[in-house]
Amino acid sequence: MLFVRSVFNTLLVAVSTFIFCFLAYGGRLLDGSGDKVIQLAHLWGKTLVWLTGMRITLRQEAPLDPKQPYVFMSNHISAADIWALYAVLPVRVRMIAKKQLGSIWFFGWALRAGRFVFIDRQDPHAARRSIEEATKRIREGVSVLLFPEGTRSRDGRLKPFKKGGFHLAITAGVPIVPVAVKGTYDLLPPNTWWIRPGSVEIILAAPVPTAGLGDADRAAVSQEVRGRVAARLGEDEAAVRAVAQ
Image 1: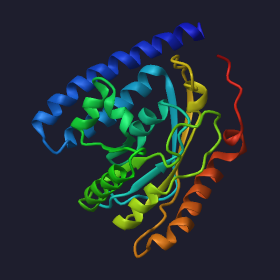
Image 2: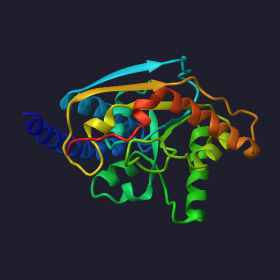
Image 3: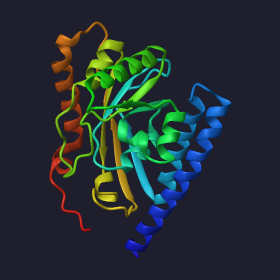
Image 4: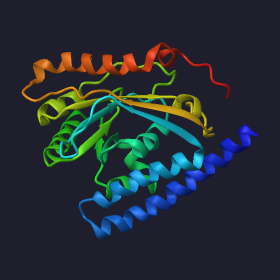
């Protein structure tokens, strides 16, 4: 029965994502800023959580100022992280994503309609321009979500954090919110399409301030943010998981 439910969940996610991508085009026509698309993205996340039977517990360790832009930095263990985070993050965010996501048929078009920021890690000059564009948007009051490991962990372990996101946050002078996602690895592990129902915990640690800092402080900030994420994941989440395929 679990396998049948998992297959059904995958079909629900595919159909729902297609519908929301279609709606994203209408949202962009109504609002060239892409803000309507971001509203749809958060609704998409809530819809997928409900459809797939995902039970999310959100723990927020400090209040967030709704008028303050933030850089949310999360561990990345599953494709399900994206809709889980969009379902519960208390502020609207644009995701900073790798360039390949923007090339996915239909889905990538919807991301572009929402003015998401794409990073081309194979081209340092293009990546720098993307960071500059993201910095500009943050200074205009836009919060962003990124995965500082750069890609999904294939074994559930927390990987080293790349420096680009910290350069972005420090340059923009906005706080970083460390985010720990637990449980999605078991619901949608790597190398499978089948989405299981189950429990997920998302922890928003207290923001790490960056105002007044420079690139010389980047390593210390990175260590602090990664340490907060690792501490909230705990030993169980950091361990290699044996997932039945």
